[in-house]
Amino acid sequence: MEALEHEAVPQHEVMTDEETEELLQKFGIDKSQLPNIKDNDAALKSLEAVPGDVIEITRDSPTAGEAKYYRVVVE
Image (tube, rainbow, N blue to C red; front, side, top):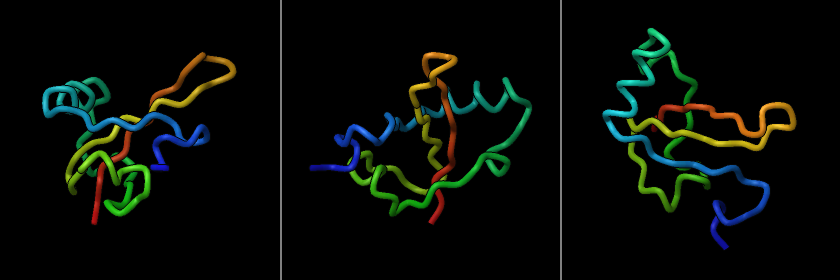
């Protein structure tokens, strides 16, 4: 069983360059200001993410329904 298939692991997706640019502009930040996620994280194994990619993590939220978090992949 892959990590992303486990019920306790939230959905992870690699963002496109366009999506990443929109995100950074929306918040007025650059990639270096995003929290990091290591490229060897089990949740990234099947995504083929490389350092510099931005990952969108969608978690269930009891108050908001779902919440999105963003991480930049690092070595």
